[in-house]
Length: 98
Image (tube, rainbow, N blue to C red):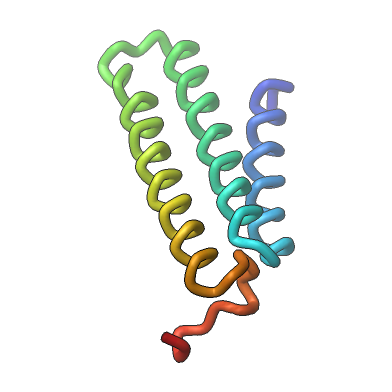
């Protein structure tokens, strides 16, 4: 494994570990998801550059577009929960409470 692949793999795994172990606030979960998507975007872009493949050159841009949509939906949920519950703590959110 080259140092470049190790860097992006470790960045993705650190985002995944942050998402699984530090789930106290919704904002921290969203930041971990964005870090994972950013590492996937950069790894996919570098992989396509190394293969010199132009057939799938739009794949990183599509991934980036989906990442932007995911970020906007996450921020909308963050604002909605902050307005209704008063904070973004994930422990305060329950499905039984309206």
